[in-house]
Image (cartoon, rainbow, N blue to C red; front, side):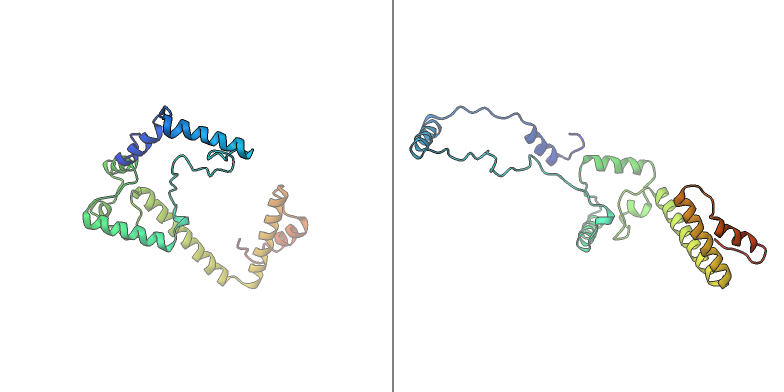
Length: 204
């Protein structure tokens, strides 16, 4: 319960209340039940129950789903941007529950939140509550991968037709060996690669 805000605590408290015990009122309940019983005897059939197998069943409580970045659509992005605009104007944050606020305050105390975010000056699409060390690490990894990809493309562009063909041959052989799970190149592919190794360089 301590992870919920006051409104959610009230709602959850209502759900956890034990069922109330009612005493049937003579005129409104007992008399009605007798009338139904007489009607069933007259028609020779039972009245359908509101809790029977054909009755509509409602979920006991709402289930909340937090969408990830992969599930974002333009409408949800615009909604998030609108919320952020209001937060920056009012200089306050809107939290899903008390636990989210506690976790955020802890990150603030540990110095993991950027100064721009603390001053409500983050960009409109920036996620709130991100560890800046992890964000920087992810950015460095992305830059390194982009640089490696660019260098690989440049090397491929400079490679001669023979080098490209040899690289493709070795890559196909390595894939076949991996699929066979023996780690060895097929003889028909290994021999040409070894015999021509002194003639030209091979890039993989």
